[in-house]
Length: 365
Image 1 (tube, rainbow, N blue to C red):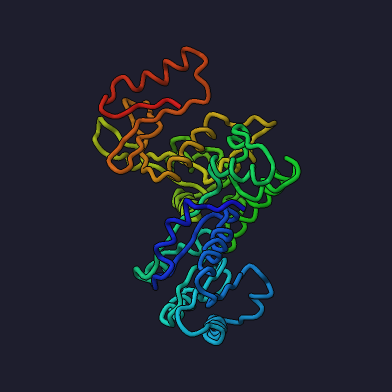
Image 2 (image 1 turned 90 degrees about the vertical axis):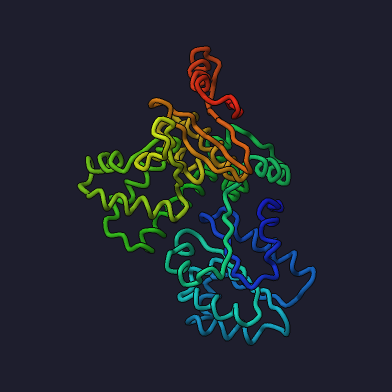
């Protein structure tokens, strides 16, 4: 597996810190690999290391409760600072108690976890500043190029636009195996959420997920989503808002707000929705009619977030500039189009730039 230096350089300054290092991300985005890479670097200077993987049923059976884990670590750690790695720790009950206790026993703690189980408000409040978190995402294109080279394969941009960057899909031997893997991954994420949030309206939730993941790159309102769902299954808008919040907290979807120059403020009711990975949208395509246009915009969104930009959608008299990207005092207007071969399409995309401030660079990609 490639060395994901982008994330490692963010984590390294905290190797010796007593803050709990939380590596979060959607299931199968590569968190465990990064944890192993951190552990490998620390092994170069210390052998006082303990690693537990709570996805392993044998590990879970070994510990009945948080106290068992705490005692195991205290019995096996050596003198001096112990580097403790707890992979997919949310599978263990009372795992926040484990972290809080061992942090006080000269342990530098690194944990990984998927979805909202590790990002719950309760845990954040309970630790009250005694942690630092790092969000890991599926591969961006330059990582795909690097990993494909390692595997002796050739990277393909169109393949990325359709099937995204979940790392394990590149290890499959055929496209059919890849799609089966991605479908199983999607389903496991959905059922994790149903179980964790104890969702009773299962059919409604599943229908909502399958609808929402095909809305990537589009402006949405909660009213619009409620209307779409209510046609099939009667439901309240409060239920829809709650379910959408679950998907957002669970890192399946993300929102960026729309800024209106006319009103000089963010429009609270309008947000643009993006999938954590475009594979979610493509899995719902009928007859292989993939949404190249919005998938490409989603890809650009993912790349910009990876590079550390903060983003807004710009509203100009009811028309949109896809991104106002800001970072370290620099700003860019970015318009995304899958193709501008048609002169009318090119003019339509460029025309939105004409009324904008020339002090900010404009990019059509």
